[in-house]
Length: 303
Ligand code: AMP
Image (tube, rainbow, N blue to C red; front, top):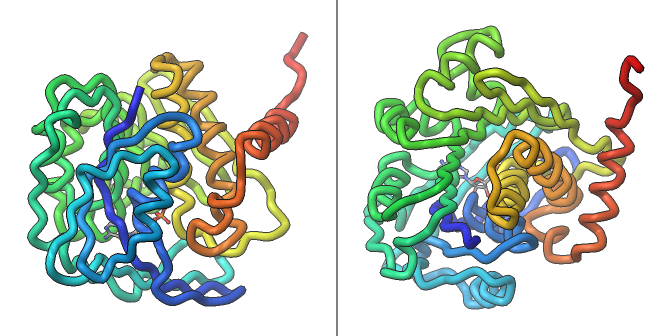
């Protein structure tokens, strides 16, 4: 099953303790699509400015991403500038320029409207809802967001969450959205807003998946070289949703395995800036790391 994704396509400028890059390819939808493309086909909804080059479009389309829903508009492409300190778990946003996204109202191509798997990547929640309303009968809707939108557009976000099955956000954003310091209580409060699963991204500590009757924990892979965490969340979501869509199954056990595939994909992204690492890997690398994850968490039962 293909996945329809709406989110940002961006130029990122990023500083980490290990180096810095200016205006490299980024954006929530870009990371998500590249990661999910190892599992399934994609349909992308986004906007770029006239300054956006051809090469990334060719790259995405070679990876099986349908770009009929990617518009080019007069103006500049979305830009984000961020910094990480030695605690790589938290991005400090220095600048956000929505640019062409400020006035973007997508009209989905007709062959996008039958999508069954939908990912609302990090972008204005009003835009997420606008896209969702144009899809006939989605089977699974997952959604990501960030502090920028929780602070600026909480009401619209809560409205969007009413239509979402799986929400994926950072630990600090869970507390911020719920207005509750205890993570378990905060997760319960968010599940009451609509989603039946909440995936809490905890950076180098992995993810926790909260559902009504269960909690599942998947680690992050302990890497010796972590270069740039930008895009780790979107890449996780790409592996997670990609696996679910490829099996067309949303049972508890598939969701657990999908969390491990998400963690596998994110573990590659953080090894280099931008999409550099994702551009190098192939399926055997993914399988090899999946096995390492399995070994990392295997232990005997009580017997
Ligand atoms: P993450 O996976 O959370 O590290 O997401 C990083 C990506 O999110 C970067 O490539 C940015 O271009 C993008 N981004 C940052 N801020 C925003 C925002 N307010 N809306 C949409 N995308 C954003």
